[in-house]
Every structure is written in structure tokens, then in C-alpha cells.
Image 1 (cartoon, rainbow, N blue to C red):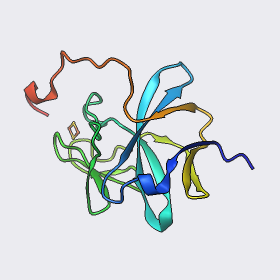
Image 2: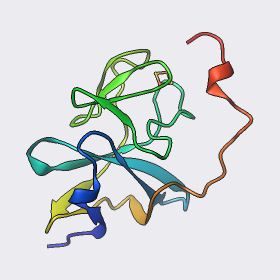
Image 3: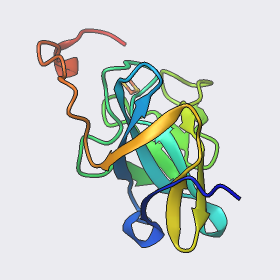
Image 4: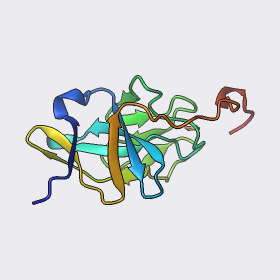
Length: 140
Ligand code: FES
């Protein structure tokens, strides 16, 4: 059985926050995902961007906010179920976070998604557009 690429120990994924990883997509672009614990010792991987404003990261590098097993977007308070990625509250209600397929084996989280390659634990090196400050926007 192909166990994919080992990314991190399950123990490195916080139970009350997230672990940021960088993957590379088929176009060669770095894409951030966050690993979160789900029920039964499993782990899910969700793309690190809010569907409301896609330049807003759910994990800014020091772990995402979680409340009642849901990821919380710090900008407008949307909540996303850690297990399904579904947003049940907030401006992007009804949206689902993009997933990368991962599997837990031998106490580690493995990337088993053919659409991505593992790059590193931590943030992407891709340049961010610092000219846009979400806090300065008006309206939702
Ligand atoms: S940017 Fe995340 S809810 Fe608005």
C-alpha cells in the first residue's frame, strides 16, 4: 500500500489549533494547508484561505483559532467544521474549504493526494501581496 509522503508526527498537530504545511500543486505553485485533528485520532488538511476573502489565511503562521471543533476565521468570525470543512456560520456560510487528501499511519500524517507534493512544515515562501490589508476594506 502506498502510504504517501510523511509530513509530520500526529503529535505535532495541536488538539486546539492547527499545523501549517506547504504543498506544491501541479502548476508548481506553493499552496498552504492547515492540518487539524478530527475525531478518532484522524487528521484533515484544509487549504489555508477563507472562501469569503481568499487572501485571508485561517492560520497566519502561529496556528488557527478553534472553537468547539471548528476553525474560526479571525476577520469576520466564520466557522468551519474541522471534519468536513463546511462553513456553517458567517459570510461564506455554505462554502467548504478545499481539501488535500491525507492519511494517518504509524503515528504520522502522510500526504496521499496525487494533486500535491509536500514541500515543508511551515509557511509558503510565495510572495504575498502586502498592498492589500483586509482590515482596511469596507463592507463584507
Ligand atoms: S474573510 Fe473570513 S469570514 Fe470574511
